[in-house]
Image (cartoon, rainbow, N blue to C red; front, side, top):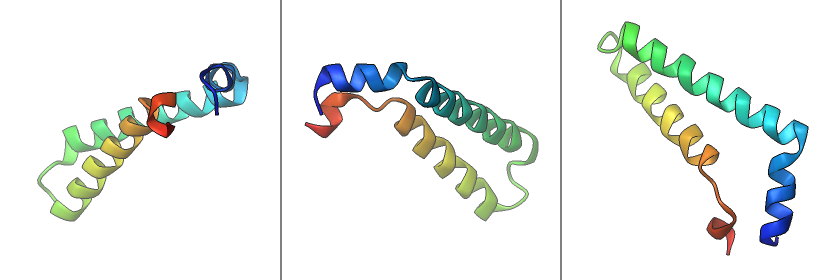
Length: 66
């Protein structure tokens, strides 16, 4: 994959929609943690991991594959 390929892919409507959906899910998980943190440690851990994983995916760059 070239840098140009990556930039073109990032501009595709389906890619942008996917990134937007990940952002919404991150915010939903943050809201869940804000409201219910401490009730169930396993759920808290899941949500923290979910947020971290999606945040990592949204920050992906072409340099990450080189």
